[in-house]
Length: 291
Image (cartoon, rainbow, N blue to C red; front, side, top):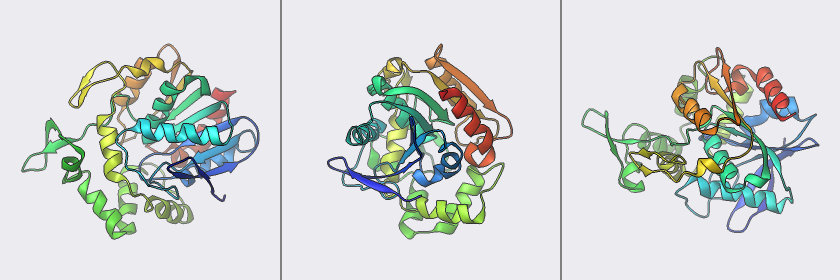
């Protein structure tokens, strides 16, 4: 699989484009890229044209402008579809990519036929709180992106890993948090970690996740914009039994907000990456849902 690139104006996005048929657009999560979708693409490319994009500041895409919201990344993806002259797609989002995908569904509902959300980010974000002297969350939101960048637990250490190109430590993080059931092959791990280490936007991404709120409720970061009501397409959501990154309540928040157009798919003995833990079931469920 070789990436292509396309100029969308202020950015150049890299993407995979494999297979033929109806388009399945895939949006990756944090600390990953389009390449992480390889196990899924290889299983469905005989049925669909699979387009997997590197978001701004990830993989081989450019990072000319910083961003504050997942909505900005969703608009990048919409420009990609316009440039490729693709009027509508089936949509797949994984983890943080699920949040970007939700924004895309709300902003451009006419372009999304169905959405399959793989362990997706909550519509109410992933709040990060200030830490006390013992490095415990205080429940108080960070006042701005610069303060969040200094978070001593979740942000600054990861940013340091990217700065020092510490692939060994990054692989340890993946093993501890993502691959809680199965492990990728050595070849897959080397390729995917190399893709992960291309990320340049970790502070922007963490801020965008912390402040995301498409509900009408309040989080510590403020009242939501209610845009979840604009998501009109059918949605399927996986809920991995052993996912330690996106807890069940976040998936259930999305499911309850999207009913009656949503279906919940509990995945037993599965962590945050069904593409590694149960790729055959994931591919079958996606094909069945889109068909």
